[in-house]
Amino acid sequence: MTPLPIHAVFSEALDVLESSRLPFAIMGGFAVRALGLPRPTYDGDLVVDANVEQSLDLFRRFDEAGFRIPEEFSRGFRDQLHGMEKVAIHKFEEGHDWRIDLFFPTTPLLKSAFERRKPLRFMGKERAVLTAEDIVLLKLLAGRTKDKLDIEELLKIHRSLDVAYLKLWAGKLDLAAELQEQLRTAGLPDA
Image (cartoon, rainbow, N blue to C red):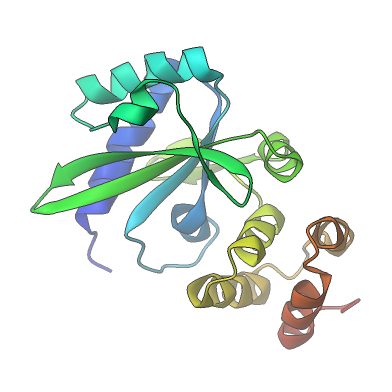
């Protein structure tokens, strides 16, 4: 698969985060890739353990690396998606505005996912990636068609998932029926 410009932009974002020394993990489409599914993605998603003050310093670093941070985020505002705090940063590359979403572990699910992150070799380095279970849960929460397809594929290649953990969180998120259907479709035990 030919790399899209987002791969270079995402790599630059990882470099900025590594230089900041803030704990972070890969999530979203790039995590799906890191977990073994070669599929295209057109944005990047990361979870970063940073308070508002640390975030402002991080945004300065991103700005110095050529990323654009919308003004409201550079003043401390954080958007929300399914209750999770996030900011979007951008980089214009090869005629396109590429977006990286930075999520912050402020919800119980994202805090748990962040604590469970695992090191994986990805894009040439050892990097923290959210577990397959947590990616499944976050994709269930998003609920888009492409997320459901990612779940289906993840369940096909990761056959020894912690089903009890998945069911616990799916219940808390009111997504038990959706998870049950995905597990049943994948033919996983205890479905």
